[in-house]
Length: 465
Image (cartoon, rainbow, N blue to C red; front, side, top):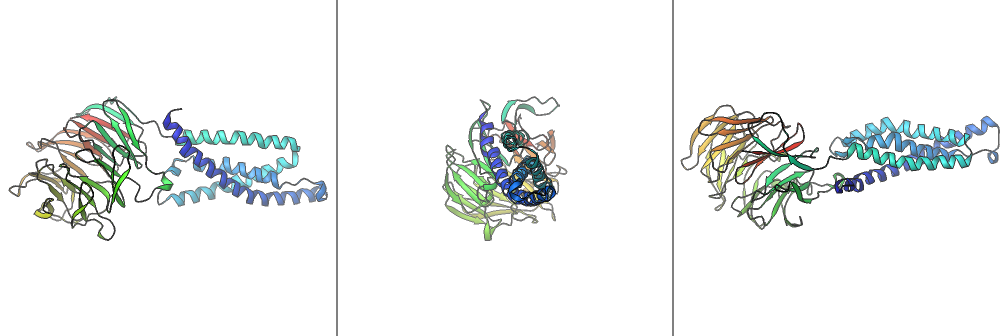
């Protein structure tokens, strides 16, 4: 059995079997006990026998109720993929399922058990319970595995047959429950994938997962442990991770948390390796905090950024000149450019008045800024504080990024990835990439490889630009 299958059996299937056994035993004792007492009384009256001469049907009814619960109620509930997604509506799901399935399982099983107890000789009845016990657990375990086990994570040579302007390099399957963030290592040899709080390091040469830092199980996850984003420091000495209520500095070799910071949702390591930027939480939710790479707080930049789960806040850092650009409010129009070295605001840019900024990016040299207002792309020269180009309709863009040479832009929306030629103002390449309310892509440091995840088919693909 492959390691991923063994892990799933030990961590998920076994846990669900234990939970089902405990609940079935509790319900079986109560429901089976009541049904058994009633069945015993009815049997005695019908046969006109005294208690010493009649068979007690309570124990058979309890056994019947237990197995009925396991097979008719617990198995359909626990084998439902919805049971793996713990969310705000999970209690409603479980309550409705239990109300629907517990009566026929518990009561029906108790009645069957009582009938068998009344008709079968005790040796035969004992063998029947034994066979049921031996058969129920393999059936339940097999059903749970077949219905819930995720496909194995594997990278293969791209097999996409549909025409695409991007050259497909490889694709990764197995992320059926979604991907939270993507990033490359500083040397471009690894792809870091965050999915369900697990952090996977893919070696792009061997096409294998070199390392995995496992996140907490759904029932054990907290707002400080549900990792949504991960990125290397510029020198690869640290791995920075962000959960909704905490930012962590980790050892990239072991995954051990070296330091915990008062931030959350998103983390932005500066390309020059000097600073780390993240959203503050608590009383100052939405402000940007700037730490040095060791986690010492340097300054706080006032903002009103909403704590979006898809890590698409309008924030960008330049590799040179130590600049940070941010649209400091969910409904505000201007883009502010800050000097991280001095902690002071350098300039404020205004684009489409009355529209919110949905995405922005700084060029690597820190001399140009691109921002999206109301489906329009505005390109600014920061040295002259002038608008040099406007592209009228780029779509509902949620992420935008300069290529390393600064000659082109990559935009990601709910439906498309596009590579824009800044000289012509037109897309040189456009590719469907359907996602639900987010755009997850990452560009390698050399600008030659694009990684993008698609919700439509749960595939992560690597493209050559």
